[in-house]
Length: 51
Image 1: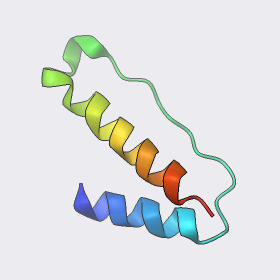
Image 2: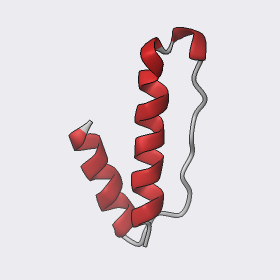
Image 3: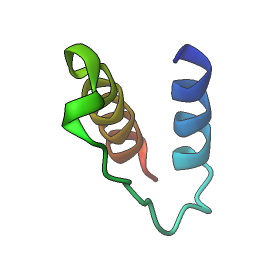
């Protein structure tokens, strides 16, 4: 997760990011909402650092 967060930050700050896509997940298979929390964390990181 740390590596993916750094990638998101670097891409967002590059000035080349135009679109971000967020894919859906199936809550039925999301154990302890791990995927939902990870996705929210990555979206937050990307949006708050977007140049």
